[in-house]
Length: 483
Image (cartoon, rainbow, N blue to C red; front, side):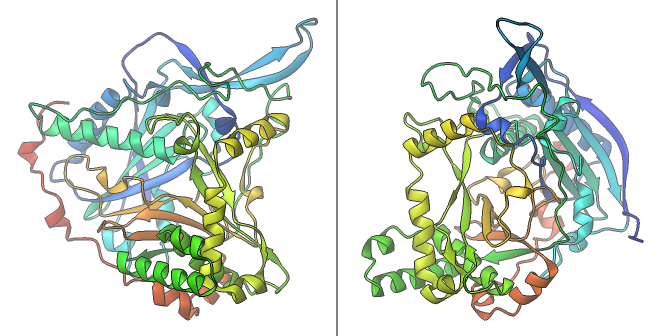
């Protein structure tokens, strides 16, 4: 039998935004396609705040309530409407999903992890401990559940010498870009409430109106050809996985890029060499080394897919503040496993680059039209067991989430949305262009990867989180009675 979790939930509080007129925001194709997928589960590890837990919870609640004034859809729920035949009201032709913005609220849970320390959560040169999964609420929830569950739930877990704040957030509400913008807006409000500034930094206002392929027009509800979503919503569990958090320094990434560039120039691909990025070089390394670790048959097709932001690629562009989903997964051309390994690091990096370059406004609009013609709800079934998927982004400002007592020590995730070959990219805490990669593989494949010299030659040594006492810079007196 599995050992009992050391984490106990002690309390729950519901946080609501200021009252406002009730209205609905229809979900777009990008949003609806995530209804069968898991909630986003991301979390941040902090040094212990130098003030009591009760004060901490009040502080977070007050800042969150204020932040929800601008981000009020986060406090809503999903609602499904049936659409009926215009000539026969008894015939249901389909259904659509919207955000019901009625201030239903989000939840903050308070939990305690007995005899668990920061060192237990982020052990150096080791798998991510399974106990980390217990720091996240709504485990097993899928985005469709936001019809009755909060769209956003926070779990504040006390450790012996720190605190872990885990977030569960419906991916059908928005993508990672908007999610981290929301978290950083909350963090900025929390800092301002703690140490009011005479001229607080002005925050960007989220753009809440959803995108429509008919430029300039408000989006119409996406009508799915079902009376309800029961036939198409699935709940799938991933296979047993091992997870490693791997650090790639800026120097290591530059070396990977330089090696790929030299190979491309030697092969006569000057255009590919000129367009090369560190992301392509890192994706190539993961793709090729995971393929080798899986010991795929030489003729087995494999591809590298990557989540990509549509905002800057649309014409006209969507502003960075667009609050919703605006992502697709692009794929490098499928190649036989034996050919991928034989053609080398540079070729694979250039293949990823070609996939990114081909993702244009025309490609995005064609994919929207294709989805409308044949709607699909994505989940783990769509992960290619022979390929790799590069998710998340090192551009997300995870370490900017200083809630009032110092920036996070580490970022981690829960069990959600993981499969064999999923690589999630994080900014490294040290900054400067370094990247952390959270890699999930089956135990067998991870064991083989651990023997791969090419891969580990590029991985940089772990850096332990800074001393907790040096990170928590606030004092009890600095946390003003603003709650």
